[in-house]
Length: 269
Length: 207
Image (spheres, rainbow over the protein chains, first blue to last red):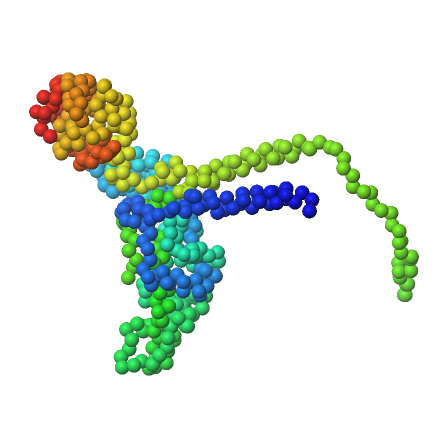
């Protein structure tokens, strides 16, 4: 081949440059990422999953949940709300002033100026930072960032949104019974759900001496025949534990917001 | 109305004229390509500035850069107080005592590790910036004899409290925070007095 060596060098540089950009640079920037501290409460985040939830990630993966669900909340911007916390000595003046001001959906500058105006007449205010976007607040509170995925292996980002985003599902729907019911018969809890039932994660068996404490409490049209009960298998319980562990509901440095109340990262029971 | 297909009867041209061979000629690149390239580079740079975050791993869209993200941090009480203290310290005290709290050898005593700064109570410490301090003082095993003006007399209670809290919790110092009420109480007794005269008088002030 003519100029074989030059072609090799050119191909090597082209591939090497893209490797540096797509592999080396991200590893240098985020490869040593560690647990971080939640802004307000000072708790560490994220916490390592429990054993069940860690195995549940593999169940999630094995059943192809990423084909329909993403785990990444998008954010388009931020707005600021100015909230009065104390009226001070001249409540009438403060309330008159407030009735003339716009206090929600402000830019940072507008919020600061409203803050100054109210503070000069003696009121005390708090400025709340609220993320905005098409996923917020229906699926999450703030955008997803790299820290959220620290203990995910492999990360289940997903790209198809046939179903809702699950990055914050543990905080939105933090009830194990609901999750199990939804896995067995999605339409029993979400009427127009397009999700297929995952019957094979459950066992329909004859009721023995006493009903199993794990048995699903199904509505009539989804219930098994009389004398039978539906109990979740270990896999279903692991998957439900994993779903409950998906919580991206704490403010971080790189994704700040003002929580309604100081949030904890303890998974819901 | 039958018409024979004339075309098919015509003999095919088996030897068409070859098209002209493409030839390399010299011509200048039009100016508009240069202009367009420059405009595209400019637009790209503007877009990068707004969306690139300058490759900072902490900056995600929709935040433009680290400064914007920093400005949006919800400051809790302690953090905000520290920021206020640092700012006031650096403009009022840092010129002599240094932004690193180490002072200037032979001229101004250090605050880092100083036994006066790290005292249990904050009353005596608060009185130094309110009244000023002249004469000999013993700090960290050395004698100092600079004179300090009443630098804190012009600061508000909350600013002075923030500064005192800042110097008591920075550079390895680890003493309790000072509240604006503490400063207010000390100011009430200290205002208008002459500068504290050396270590002997300083020691008579209750901690």
